[in-house]
Image 1: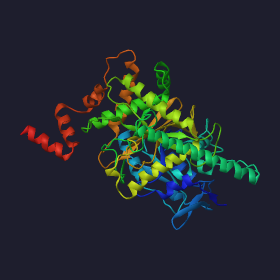
Image 2 (image 1 turned 90 degrees about the horizontal axis):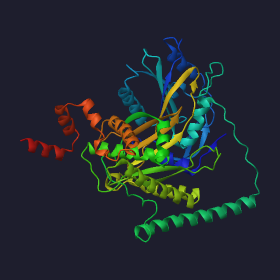
Image 3 (image 1 turned 180 degrees about the vertical axis):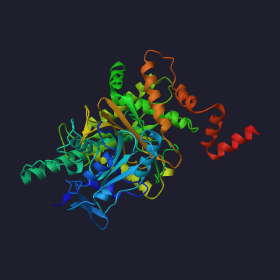
Image 4 (image 1 turned 90 degrees about the vertical axis):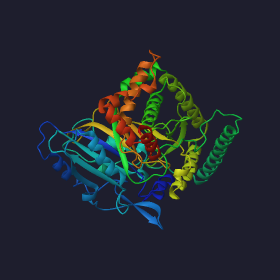
Length: 498
C-alpha cells in the first residue's frame, strides 16, 4: 500500500540536486565482542543483507508524476548489495582519514529509483572496532523521527538471538480515530484562519523591526554575514567530529543560568569566529545561526518532518566569553518567545517561505551574491541515555552528519548518547579542506567558558594557540597561513617580503 507524503516531506525531494543532496546520516563507532573472529564484520554485513524485506518507510521508493513526488511505493525485495556495502580502511583510529572517507560517501546522492537509504560498514581488519555510516533521505523524517527509529534498532542489551536491523523492525501504526466530517472541516477552517492570523502577525513584527518601531523581535531573514563558508552550495564535503562530556555542559548551564543549548551555541559561535579568523575574516556584525524548532506536541510520535527553522543572532563585540554567552541567551530567548506566541503551523509556513527564497537563489545560482539566512545551523537531538548494542557489538558513539542548507555555512548537529555529546560537522569544501581546527576550537571555547566565570581576564583571542603550537613551527605557520590566504593577500604578503 502506497504511503502519502506531506508537502514538507516533498520539498526535500523537489529541491534536491547533485550539488546539494537532501539526505542526513550518522557515523557510528562500534566495539566488537571480546571473542569476535577476524571476519566478524564481514559476517555481520552478510547477515544483515539477508533482511531484504523492509518496513515502511525503508521499503518505499518515490512514485512521481512529471518529476513531482506523489507517494512512497513499497518494493517487495531490496537490492541489498546497494543498501548494505562494506569498505576497508588502513586504520579506524586515524580519525582524520576516516572523516575524509565519510565526506566522500556523504557528497553523493541516493539512487532515486530505490528506497532512499544505505548502510556502509567500515573495517580496518586489525582493531576490535568498526564503523557504520548510515544515511537516509530527509523526506523519510526529521531528527526526532530518525532518532526514535535508531533507538528501536540499538537495544540496551546484546541481542544475538532476535537481532533485527532497523530497516526491518516492525513499527506499530496507530489507528486513526474516525471524526465527524463536518466537525473536521470546521476545525480545519478555523485552524487555517488562526494560522494565517499568526503568520500575518509574524510579518507585522518583522516590519516593525525593519522600521525600528519595535526592534525586539527575531532576526530579519537574509541577515547572515557572507563568509568563505557561505554562498552557492557545490558538490564536495568536509566532515569532522568531536566529543564532549555532557555532564560538564549541564553543570555549566546551572552555574551560568543558561540552557545547555545556549552554552553550546556560545561555544560554536566562538569556534567558528576563530576558525574564520585563521582565513583572515573579521566581522563588523554578529554571525547568525539557523535554529530548528520541533513542532510536535509533547508525546507526539508522528513520522515525517515537523520542524521549523528560524535564524538566531549570535554574539558580537565582546572578547569576554561570558559576556558573549549573555548576548546569545538574550537573542535566543527572543526567538523562543516569538515561537511560543504563534501556532506551530505558522512558524512552519514561515520557514517554508524564507527557505523557498533561499532555494530559488540556489537553483538559479545566485547564492554567492545574496546574504545567507544564517551562517551556521546548529541542532541538538537527545539520544539514548544508556549504552546500546547492535546485535552483540557495543555502540561507542553516534555522530550525526546533516544536509547543507541553501546559502551554505556549517551544519553542526549533536546527539547526546550515554552522557556524551557526539558532535558532527559538515560543510562544502570549495574554500576549505578541513574542519579539524573547528573541532579543536569548539573544545577550547568550552574549556574557556567554564573558567571565565571565575576568571574575567580570559579572552577569546587566545583560543587557537594550542592548535598552532601543537602542529606548526614558526616557519611552517607562515607557509600554512599564506596557503590559506586569498590570491590578493598572497600578492601583498610577497610584496612585503620583497
